[in-house]
Image (cartoon, rainbow, N blue to C red; front, side):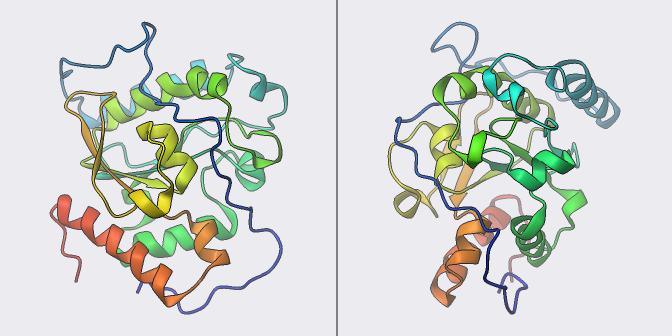
Length: 240
């Protein structure tokens, strides 16, 4: 199950952070409350690659829209297949990600990669991004203004990639993406929708790999695998 037999326990696993400031939907546009209603033409692969690269190089890397830019080493735009059927979305970069400029590296990234492989994919065949592109101090939950500043980047990534399913990793990411108040234990395993693009994308919330590293029980592993199987079924893949 999940392709993992054992996970080392020790220092270096970030604490799971709970959102206390309330839901902050990332589908905020320039005009409050406006979401996409008209589907845009689907881009061809070269167009997707060019659009993502341009956004990263010309906008995100030089972004100073919020105070997170003051403490970053590197921005963490996201990576993977622009035609990916599944897109994983976390809350924000941690220390390892900030240093390397890549999402989900280190122990959490290793576990996520094993989960992806258990689903029948390689990491290069899916897409991984975060709600915010700069590391919040001490890995805290992004503030409302920081999410608002970054929200359009994620919306456009989703709009370009057009994944069949989004899997949010951890409670903060689910709350920030979906704008829900419930904790991850209540909403994981249940289908939601990201309405920031048209047509809306199905969203499956599940536990963050860091949580699974801390609470590596048979029950928690079964819950995550159940969530991932639902995502596979939605995209038409064999989950056996």
